[in-house]
Image (tube, rainbow, N blue to C red):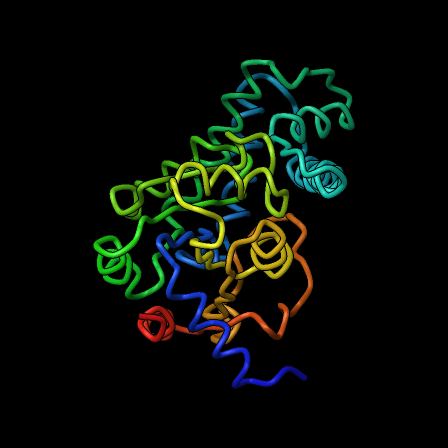
Amino acid sequence: MPCVYCVICIMIRFMDRIKAVGFDLFNTLITVEPNALDDAENRLTRSLRQSGLALEQELFKRAHREAALRFIKETQRDGRETHNRFWVSAALQSQGYNVPPDDPWIAIAVDAYFSAFLPYCHLIPGTIEMLSILKGRYRLGLLSNFTHAPAAKEIIAGVGLTSLFDVVLISGDLGYRKPHPLVFRRLIEKLRVKKDEVLYVGDDPEPDITGAQRAGLQPVWTTYVRDRNIPPAPGVLYRSSEKADCNVPRISSWKELMTLLEDGH
């Protein structure tokens, strides 16, 4: 077990160099009600039915989830981002409909799917206040894994976060997803700082913590959702290991993040 005093000393020395703070989005800045996924899948199926496809709802939902898991598993091999249009096309093919991913009806259905999420998204208490304080001291970046970038940006704007960030990066735009080093390099470039001048706050150990570490950033593990037994943002996407490196600072409130930053100055 590492010496706690040594870890604190290292962190204090590191904090002296921090010029920018990056954040994950889901389960870090916002939570999503569990029933969002069911609503989204119902809207997806309804949209496809309106385009003339005679789908049995539960069968299609199951096929869609299986396809999503299959494509997400592929992203874990090389880090390349996938997209919902491929999941929908594969699910339709399993139901006997040969509809290509670039079909306009699929694009409409994907938009219908994501239209469900914004009403179910809620800021973690104190987030606006915390970011407003930090914005006067650091450059702020948002880096999120999200397959459909327009929907992510709509959610970010809908909860009032857009103006608080100097940089907003979504994996659906980048073509790669965390923990691939390319996305962290892009964050560093856009923030116009050195890699060891960036603190990155996230909830998911592998993409957020391990990914940031490997890219040379200083990660901070936020366990707000975990510690309060709040259901994680719903979805069929793979979630990584249960715990982060014990050498990584852990916070459970924005007050603890502010204290961590203040201790270094």
